[in-house]
Length: 257
Image (cartoon, rainbow, N blue to C red; front, side, top):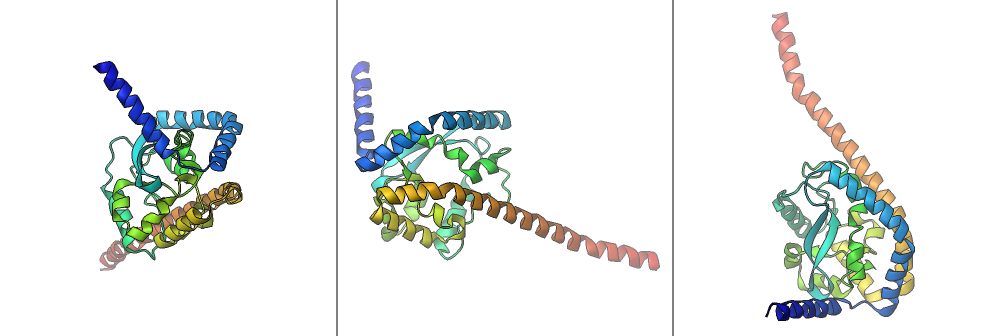
């Protein structure tokens, strides 16, 4: 009986994995070729990131989360853990709802300035995209591609309007047209339109162009995040100075009296 259950489980998983493998042949070949060619560097960098996560915070190195991919299919997405184990997610749900409701607001990440939930060096890993290296496993399993719309979490998917779900007509990816077109400088609706545009125009040369633009886009993203942090620190310092000014004036008046 147990053997039948295990066999049935393996067959179900294989069927689900086959169903998820919906990328065109040229896309699969491109994904696998690039992963194999970059494997030595990826393994070296991935090992370094794993050590940073392990030494920086107790808990698992790999973070697993159910995501929504092609045509609304659910799958387990892998990432290097960049937040403390067991942190709350309500703030992220609220932030996501705000971005969707206020679709003209820039897609600023919740941890763009400072987030106590993030582990040491976690912000750097997130800004550079190194935390997403384990998703190459998802690519090899056929659940994702190197290029495509980012897979979202379930509660975000439930907030989408029917036309917005057209972004799931393409296999999800690590990078995409939205990521190299401004990402955090864009609005939610702009992201949706860019993802839909990619799903309708996806081809070999477009994927290559997006891949080559990804590193420069990450550099710009890191610079933007650094600038926002400096602005936040400056604003906090000004607030501290202003709040302390009345007490200084009051002390001077008392001394003069």
